[in-house]
Length: 474
Image 1 (cartoon, one colour):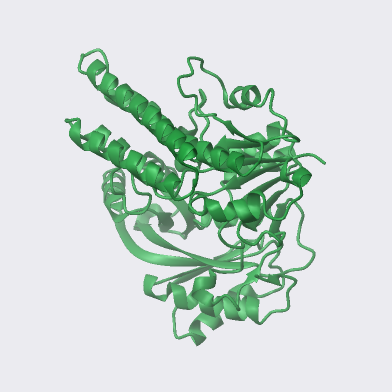
Image 2 (cartoon, helix red, strand yellow; image 1 turned 45 degrees about the horizontal axis):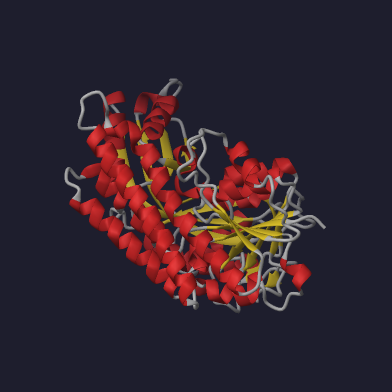
């Protein structure tokens, strides 16, 4: 049997003691403990403190360092990171010696990062050096602190429990060489034997490509997928706090949702487009091209095989999942647009320049409407740039929501018709709806206040009341 490569997210990592009793060891015999490689994220909240809060945007060390002329704010924030790291591992480690080792690890890494930032500020006080040129490297340096800490603590905990755990640091800490991602991974695993030891690997990997340039905070899944592909893993597994289910159980009810059980990478891509990533699309591509199947499991339900994601088509047509996303619509109307080229390209250029993610798009003779995942602040800038480019156009933005019904094969199910009727029966109105010819998703647009009601209505009509092979989630 070959090994598996398995990833644990930050929220699950904060329940590490439970994972020791379920995922890492549980009731396994000694030989069953090994042939598993674990890629870990930082403990919950640590990356927010290091960079910025993912949802609220509250600045962390990185944002404060980038925008503050003094040392005090970012240095105080770095102190808070150290305190949070120590609090996290004090809740997990039970042996005083292990806690002391973890404290020393945090102190050494935080001090190194602090000295690096101070030196960089001093260097950039000279006119030949510009701080913005180095901010990408600083973002990567800070990110790596979180994963290095959690991987080190996990290895300590497992070693204390009798597991031959090995801390594998891909963060490039004090590494003087510039290497590509493939070399970083293969060099680190040159003398690692998963059959006799359990590698605990940092989710961040330092490399010349600069993972954060393209993937930002999705880098851990890229590391995970490349590690699985390069080491010839039998299977790649992502452990979450819940099963990959037909809807959010908190919204539609735990007794109503169904575990997917099996789906394909096409559905995973559609979920990612709706902001509900089973896996980053680029990571999925790496696994798909390497022929490595992906499994998504509930880390706290070890007896359940979870959901297998591969490249196989569905055996029968079925709606598999209903999910929603807050969006902003950008509508560009110009009476003379019909038959004139350049509008699409011009709008796309502006959206790309402002790093706005496009969820979907519709157009007719004189109107182009983009459904976007963006803040209103960003949209104001986008509108100004488009107005300069097309001064005769009427440009409007609205805060709406999109609900998508997704499945490997929706042929013959009349999802669009039944969905619109279900929304109407729930006393809500769809402002827009679209279905592509590939029949893997149907999108409904409505007011934000209607999104939760619409998800419940569509789930009840298209999944709960339809015969399907999807199994009830545990």
